[in-house]
Image 1 (cartoon, rainbow, N blue to C red):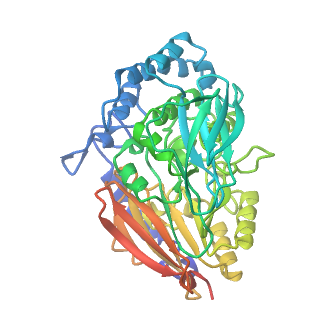
Image 2: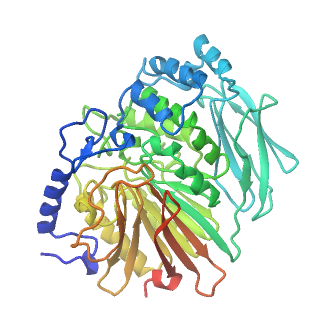
Image 3: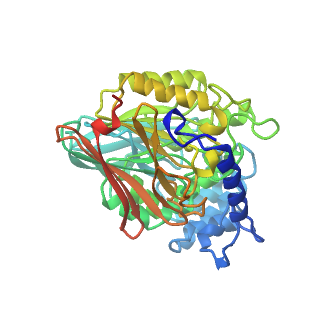
Length: 513
């Protein structure tokens, strides 16, 4: 029997593993699974409507669209009319959708000047990138600080998207902007503002989490996150697309749902977002890599192309080879390394079967080159094996690689590393003790959709920091680099605004001796 400590601090003993799987099987066995991922009842209680929604049908998607407030009839009519067109072909595009006269008319009836956005990303000390999806091929410009940026052409090849870089702004400043398409300002009710970052000593917030599963994007909690004015939101999986298994036309219907959700568009026009996928965005539950007869190399390539047109990240994996979606960026006092734990999976398992050797080498190089006081290292699934016994994650695929990466951080005394993870619905945090006396901190936050998940706590998890399940909440880091030993405070915040958990750590505590 192995202990939950030392170099094996990531691991769970086999005895507990079997017990945990039995508990999870009992927890998720239900009589009714009509709508979604799990059943309607837990311990005899009727579940809230959002717990009943899976990938479903047009009806389910309409329920999600109206879940947090009835949308205008014209918007609903557009959404309904788009469904048969986007589902008509496996890889139907927005460009093809917008060739249909009925859809053009529906957009006009709804008073729409664009199909998605504006969405901010790639924030820096001097600017940000602005993403938008147009109704037809067009010229896009952005006005900010008395200057005009662009034009950038949207095209059928870009699936009607354009990304305009706004630069030359002052650090740590708030600047309004507006987007013009073919010289005309878009109609938009949200706040369009860019808040540049600063790498000088001070305080910075970065929000993060996973598992919106579409309905969470319109939840009032998104307003709470926005009002806290984080420098960015890190979205680490299961965000806007649900189990489409390589059918990118259907996936685009999910993206359209995202972009017709008012609370989401209000959020992303003001708060920069960075997004990596997990299983449900990638293909389906627990799917990674290629699956014979279910998810092909062509499917994987098409899904990646869709991802690059749906978000506004600073990079997408190995761009030359068009593989993966991982990236590194700097946000204020933190280097952010967001890994891709799906694209490169090898189902033979063993060393390098989780990230692939090339991505693992890339991660190590980014860690070595980091000059920031802190490093956020994100993974769509768990770093440790506590929750669900490492199901669908490092512990079931590549324990050797995980240990190799841990030892690499320790050997090179790489400081300020914060591990964040998602996938298992709810939020749980752990310390991961090492034989040398050092310990890593893993913060899990998969509760943006308030979904049912594994048990929030377990007496066997002796290093657990916090745990909640089946509740809406979000996570944030607040960095204070004005101190001699810079600090970071991690908070888990309930949808009500109540602080569920917080911990403040000095950089020295996060640095191996």
